[in-house]
Image 1 (cartoon, rainbow, N blue to C red):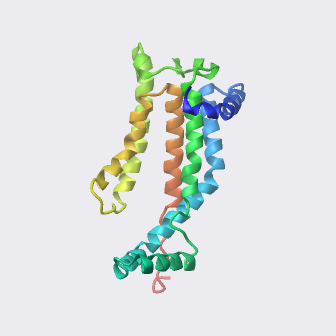
Image 2 (image 1 turned 30 degrees about the vertical axis):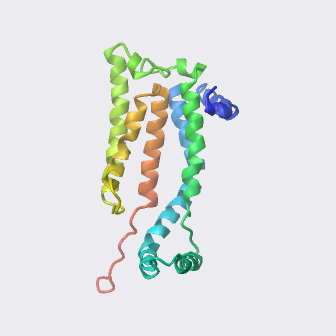
Image 3 (image 1 turned 90 degrees about the vertical axis):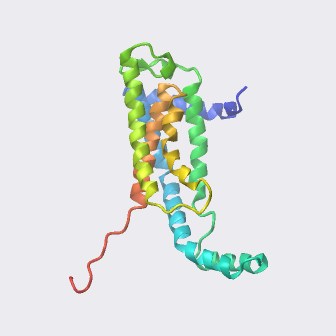
Length: 226
């Protein structure tokens, strides 16, 4: 039995929600709408995560200075770091809850779209939602998968370019981390079309959400020009 079987009660609820939507819209669109609804519910956690990331970035120079000042003296460093976080009302783990909160949702959707059920018999542009790309037997079916992978690659490229503007940590192989933006394309090749559609929807949402929450503040006009 799969380890993810413990999620089956929640998977059934997700199935029922998507099936209910599929009575009024095509099933593929129901998957998109359900994914958007859940990501919208998780948005407050994403905002918390963004605040946490900004706080860690803001405090990074001061933390590095404390590490240099108390190098080799953890009995001095740890209280100093604790005091810094207390003063700034922050935490080294601030905002991580949003990231972990998405893992159960991803697991539920993965289980829903990789376990045989009636939703996977529905079609998108003539392709069964339960079909894997290795099972495609016509140019039309391959074209649908091709469009999906191209869209995922486009989102990955946007994220790659965004990551390229972010300084990398000084660690061996850190540059490879930027290419993880294309990981969804690879993963989508091993799951049914329905799961790939979910991946595309949640990837687009994540990319747009990060662009919104991490946008640079508008420059204020200088007093001389006001």
